[in-house]
Image (cartoon, rainbow, N blue to C red):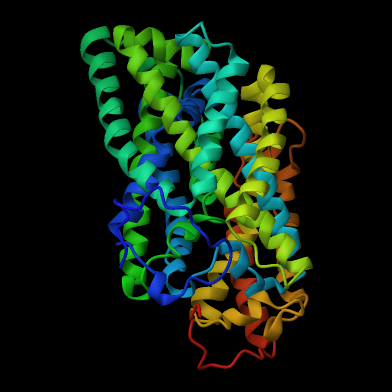
Length: 466
């Protein structure tokens, strides 16, 4: 066994290859700190503030919707996390077991785009917050600084990212607590704080969806951070450590966002700086570093997914540390361009981006979880994941691809965005429940279709990584 603490700066040599059992290390509680520490950042605060700024909910309704959404979405996120110790491969590689070698490319490519979007969003927030508190930095310089810290962690890989987020769990957690104490106890809340905004169903469902998606967005890469865990870690331990780490790490900063959003008008980051007074220097510094930690995770997993695409097309390619570094730099350059060009309309772009994510992630997560837990029961031929012809899973599993496309289509009438509002969403006053419909429809459809399909996978396979 290796110690994470003493070898955090060791360069990770593997990329998407199966992790051999003698290279496994870590404990389930490491999954708590990586998800708790990585969520306490400015983007989480801003996302929570949407409940009162965009969806116009009062405090109690906003908190109820955010808590419920996170707790529901967290179930799916944690179920994916529990797959890592069993299979020892990144989540997007394992997706070949449902979609086939080429069939998975559609989903993997969409996931790479998702990572780029989140990375760019975090860069903008980091740059803007650094400029707000430290005018010496321009927003662009702040964007580049946060990005460079993220790239370094990505190049070193798994161990350094785990160590980084473990430290941030304590530092960011303590800073978050200080924010609440300062805003409530020192600055004080407005007299009509609890009466601001009115309860509305559209806003409640919108907030619920945003919070659920916050958790669902981790599904395509959550097991990337559990794949080095010993196989005997246990699915239950991996599930609960990831679940509570991510839910608590999300709900608490979102609550801060709700508080700031009700106290001030305008930009949330500027409002946070105003409300925390002399504490603001520390808050901005810590939360900006927190952004870099999370962005390292986004870039790392985006890199693994991009390598997965490359390895699918060129099966003999066994990417190592150098390939990861080069791929990370290419993706970083793309995200940097998006951040520098899109910073002026950040909130509008971000809100539309996460809603669009909802529609493409939901059917994938339904198919993956049903296949893993109810169809294959965690038993996959890992060697087939790395063959051009998909091994026993073939080039394309049309059952999965068809269900995925159906999952997107059934959501269309329930979509509610600036670009398009479905007829049923309009009838419900603009409430967006598309993700619920997608999950409820696709999970049983895929299960029944898979049961009827003649699966070639032997029943005695074990989810082994070597």
